Image: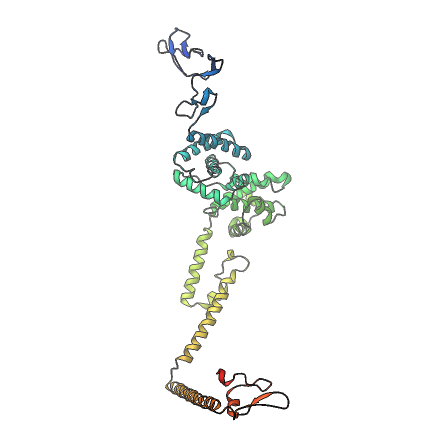
Length: 432
């Protein structure tokens, strides 16, 4: 609000026709020729109407210029066009997600920074808009998740996640970790709990708080913690709910929920009744699940190094969080069995190829000499038989038997080449 420099009065009257501001107390003109928001038209010589003045928007750096032929259109630069399109997209997505106007304003400011840093170049405007809205939701601590934007825009959630992470790294934003308690009331309404929905939600909130004290929430996604808390709370109040009921609503893996439930079973709060859980405060904190798992692995390695087979086979080092078969680590896997079989095969081959005793070496040498002599003798016999067959073709004729089968008359040729069931030579001498 402007103040009169003469008398200090705040009663200033705006005169839109002249664009002046006049003090009503002393009559001093405080401001003149001011920019007004009214639109005026004048008629030209040819009867055409034209607008007086130039239009300056809230975000523009300069006035718009008139279009061709004195029309009522105005040209904008590409940057301002991109910002207007971005705000329109933001409003469209916000209306789908039922977000208020303050989310739109915060997202548009982030989108303006993205345009200034050329983050929109080479990327879809829809992805950048979703990242800006999700950041504004994270800053305002709303109940919206990134997968909700994925469903509204029909875009892969990993694509939106990649765009969000790059934009956050570009701006250097430090967003707070989402509290799993934000999603409890939202998803409790989808479990069909009837009039006990509020009671189940309160129990789930208390479970989330207990999980925080027991180091179960740290480093875990809030959706998995919320799903496990809702599942335990619903069962505690007498509802028959399974893992599929919460995984379908919260879009998490069933193994994640099963692991969170198993981790909560190892805490002292798991042994309390529903009334005791709401009244008794346990001050003792348990170790983080990752810390306990690493201690078990170190104990296994120490027992293997010390060759303490009694401890390894007793089952004391089995991790109860490994699922239905905690003793699986003590059994040899398929790869270990194949590796053992290969090692034994290679050892046998090495013993056969590299004999250790002198007697075995001598026997192996004698066998090699016998085999070589047999080869030379057979080769000489075959050469003589082939030469005689070629030089005396009449003496070595094929005789047809009475049963219709053919055989070689020369017994040497018959011994050299195998016969078929009809007595014919499978390999003829001229094909050897």
